Image (cartoon, rainbow over all chains, first blue to last red):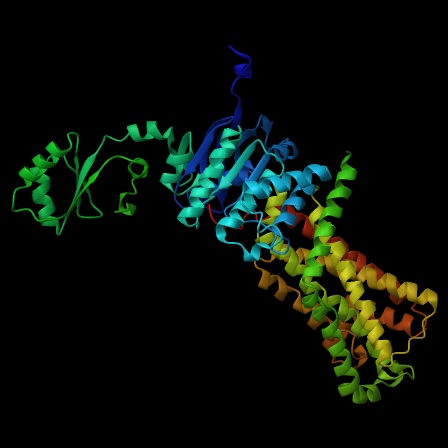
Length: 318
Length: 269
């Protein structure tokens, strides 16, 4: 054991049994989470899955109806004030002050974090440079692009050097280039040892950034693990066949008895364990009399895992 | 740093932010705080004043209509400041700024203290400018120095009460447009249903009862008495009592709404 490792990994977030209902709508149905310090943890799920509600509870904005949680070792209910000193939140709608310039926005956050004047100025200058906002520093966010606004929002969050950052859908609505920039920024934060709880609807984003992922559907965690662990849960690659009509599919299903069907679409999936060999075998067994509209080869990705665990196959893309 | 110094520091920060906002929105604010009341003053004095003045009888105490009118225009000036305040608060609420502050270790009341403090300043600045314009147009108050202090005090108390009410309205309405709309009864309806332009005695029975007993009338009557050099008597205390009651209820309402934040208005999960 050397000196660098003598502080043992601690828990940044620990939650058990979080529940939240609005009227009769159950938004969170018993959420358990454990996030280690320095980890990037992604909550992945479609709109309405409960991602933002979890962030709002853990960032002290709303109380949970049931359950308990600690954030950086502090109790969410009893020590909310102390929790607020160590967290930073960047929501999915850029909460910047549109009448203040970019620089004034940062200085305002510095004041509200009670930083001394010299540190405030130094930190604002540093963040403007780091987030490529120097040229826009004296302009109001009305003139900013969507990506610039998000960067300013995140820079405002970082003024207080939070140890745990909540990023609620940080790239939703951004163009691909801005998304890449945001990812780069997030990776840099991670290298500084900050813990990040990220929510996203993009499987690619979670795969790219997160150490661990919890897949969320209808207020429940339906799968959790590293991206690799989650992908391993899928049986493997498959061939996806699309048919013109139900009769053709029935015929094909009889020929390919190991296939699984998707009743929403005229689709069959056939395991593809041996690449080209399997593909040739499938085509041979189908013969000439089954009309296949379309054929695609799938290697498992988080999409497959997500749709497998949620059963939402009908929403599948491509 | 003690909690009290932090509270003072946070409130000063938010006050400074609102001052900056006001400077950047100056042209808009001048319209609501000065142009609208001055136009009302001109319309009522020059266009309608001849007829209304003749009908005033004893209520005018022998003075021209403008002397009767100006105290009413002054409370309209104050009430005209409600819209901008509710809009600014609503922009903070719906734009996520309030939620952002609620995740930070910022003194709870600071955001609203900043809004309300600057709102009162804006309203009183409007009152000062409109009073100056009224003097140029022939308004001749007969108030003593002491009366003037009382006028400023009541105007400040009324501004304070309406600023808290506007802040509460800005927090509970779900959009900026809704926030603006919610203040229209304050800035347009209630002044007409009071002694702002004509004595309440001239109104139909049902309206007369409401007009005679609502806070705007108490405030206008007390200002009118003070500015005409007549004894304000109990109307000043009644006005101050109304202001205190409105301020207290609005303050509690606003605090509760702030604590809730956007709470149940789930925009997306």
